[in-house]
Image (cartoon, rainbow, N blue to C red; front, side, top):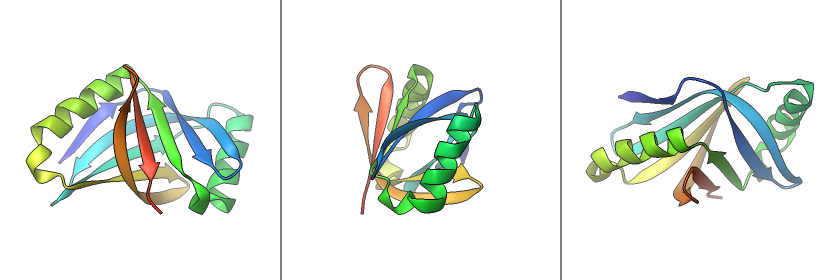
Length: 123
């Protein structure tokens, strides 16, 4: 089962070996699998600078990503509803970032402030 968290534009912060870059995203969803949930974020850089940053991160440094932050109260609220509804079926969380191809990460998820989510990438 796939549930849309936000269909419109938002942005994410990607933290990796060389710092942090903000990149636009156009679709955010969560999918319930047999025993876990997959958060899927389709990246949509809004300008040449973000495109360059995304290419640099995902072509050369994807293995050094340490965390991803979303600051969007709509996504936070919809995620909480979904996770609470299926808490007995979700034993872990994966994060899938889509930029040219799918990049799947094992992650832990925690709330951040009143409107954000933080995915800590497990290595």
